[in-house]
Length: 87
Image (cartoon, rainbow, N blue to C red; front, side, top):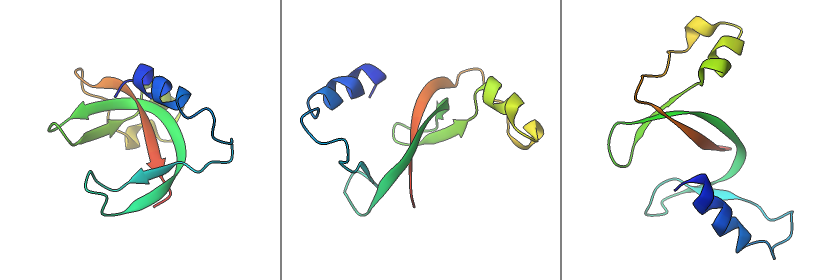
């Protein structure tokens, strides 16, 4: 999914009240759910078609208290938006 697709789908939900909860599925089969707590930008590198790694952007990494704690994103990582669950 791209930001454009997410925006399109959210437009279809604009009739819902602003207080509507956003919930993330644990997996594609719906074996668990958790409310979303934040959406942040970052870098993503796929390991497989369904899983991959999260890296900070260079700006985020340099802004960290200890930037050496975070690995630099690989050259082939791509910008992404990460939706984080409560649990």
